[in-house]
Length: 239
Image 1 (cartoon, rainbow, N blue to C red):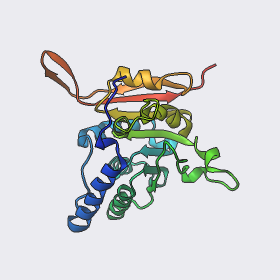
Image 2 (spheres, helix red, strand yellow):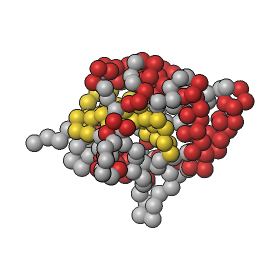
Image 3 (cartoon, rainbow, N blue to C red):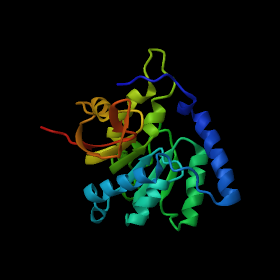
Image 4 (cartoon, rainbow, N blue to C red):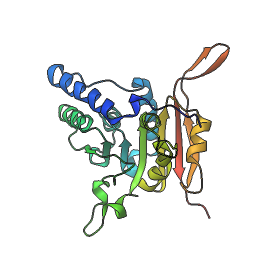
């Protein structure tokens, strides 16, 4: 897998600064903030979800690194039930912005929580909560995890004393959040499909490659490729 040098884009301070400014802009002008990777990526992820995790199945959907909530609002507009949609972000101002936008979109039932999912238990789906169970017991209750750029940002974080990137912990952590036969749909601008498959598909995660989403191709220097890569993995415990 491609190794990246640590960057400010992999720091919480950077994203806190970004979303502090976006909250101020929203309060002043009503601007909902930047759509990371653009509207086309959002539409493609929604289309994949509609085809593979249909609305009648009442799926519980969690976005990792939900930012201003654009992707979750698009799913709500596509017909998914707002109470079954959740987002987590480690930046408090990102969560604040998403909640403010939700109010203007009549989508207050979408829940947003401050959470660093690599080191903290993610809030379980509201429908899964029952008396006497811990967050750890309920964590593996999601039907679909979404990631649009968060994996990329984590890969730019500071390495630990042994030289490992924090992104190394992501695949297993994501797997633990999913129920069996659940999906992870991830869009990246830094990693190829082969690199994502090499990182996520292994016996420890129980992830298996499911499908990919086509993006427009570009050519440069005699080579062609896509700016973005969107891959779906399914958690299957085989034999």
